Structures are given as structure tokens and as C-alpha cells.
Image (cartoon, rainbow, N blue to C red; front, side, top):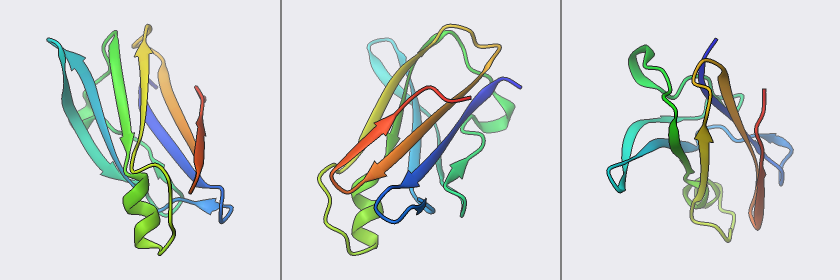
Length: 113
């Protein structure tokens, strides 16, 4: 099923990063346009970021994760106020999954399945 999802794991605790705010934007006319926002569920997932069954287009997208707010709410000092992951969709007919492995002092991301 085509679409976009994410999963965030808190590497400092070894648990899903529940309640982390995520914004999805697309690049349009020289600027970023917000398409949707969500918070990760108790399993650290946002299963669908596009509102109303909207599908991805062939375009440039950005996921912004509110890492600083997430760690601050847990009383943990961190380095990155936010993590922005910019990626390009070349085939809008396939599902795109963008996982984030998050720690107070760094992060890793990749194209998931």
C-alpha cells in the first residue's frame, strides 16, 4: 500500500519514542508546505502522515521530528532541537517508511520497508 510512515526508537532507553511530534512537508515553489502533523503512538509509530487518504507525489519531502521537545519532556538534556530528514520520492506507487533511531546526542535514519 502506497503512503508514508515512520517509526522512532529512543536508543537511550531502548524503547519506542511515544508522543514525539512529527511534521511532514513538501517542497513547492521555493519553500516548504506543511502537509500534516502527528505524534508517535505508544509503539513510536506514525502509520500514516498524509491526511485524508492523500497520496505521495513524485517530489521532495521533509520529515521534522521535535527531538528537543521530546527529550525536554523527559528531563533529558539533548543536542538536536529537531531532526529534519529530507528525502525524494521517485515512485509514488510504493510505500515509503522512514525510521529514526534517536538518542540525546545523535540520530540515524534510513529508507525502511
